Image (cartoon, rainbow, N blue to C red; front, side, top):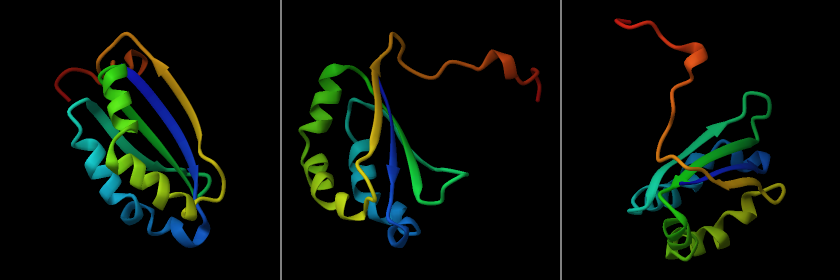
Length: 110
């Protein structure tokens, strides 16, 4: 799978509305057949930083995402709300979902 994590520093005046600003893009991406997940989180240390964790089935699904109309629209509509160019980690890994974090395993029956 293609695994991507991106950090978005958002202008302070846009931070409170970031979920609304990205709602259509998020919904459209989650609806792509090759999208495994597309999840936003807000930094605990910086209220203007949002972290996007996304995964796509394979390189073809990743390519379809960046060639989609909604990605093209996001490239136009999101930058005016950003304080800086987003930073990204993008890699291909040989799995198709989340693994359990064994060091923090929850006992059976709980």
